[in-house]
Length: 213
Image (cartoon, rainbow, N blue to C red; front, top):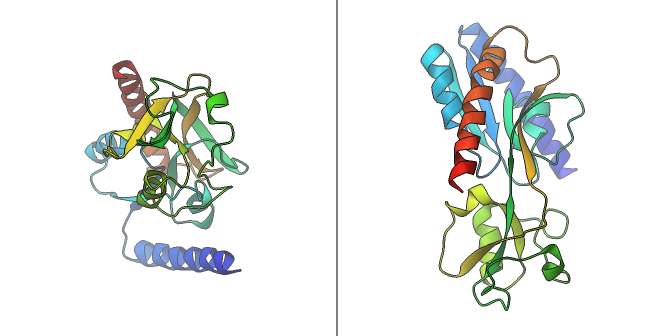
């Protein structure tokens, strides 16, 4: 009930703010993004063409993904699957591998790579087993020996610390990244214009990062 109340409050608050912005003649675009994904290339391309539109960003928490697109907090999301895409239009951007994050003291930490079988029986910190509210919390628990996690490789550069190791999991399938908007929400206006510019910009950036990795 508490989470549902939070969702309703957010929806009402967003609707009121949109009404106030319309009354002031303002145009605003809110772009949500999953942890580790970089949306700056797309925003630069958009603001160069549409400097009159104010762009805000909304960092997403691990478990919410598509929620801000449904409650009105965001117009566009740069997301990783899996999420419920019912009622959303999605545009594929690229694919991203995941790596295993372990404490440096773990018996497997000295390996150069792992398979999913190596992780059988390990306590995995994810939204189903144990919800963590921030990346800092997740990594602190891993470093303390409370479990391991599979995390997108894009996160590793921002969270390098001496008490953690990241190892590739050779047989774990990559995850798709995509842009998502509410179905019917990409009519003429800032959202459609953002998509037109963001898709090629983000695809090129994703390909460049893949080539470097």
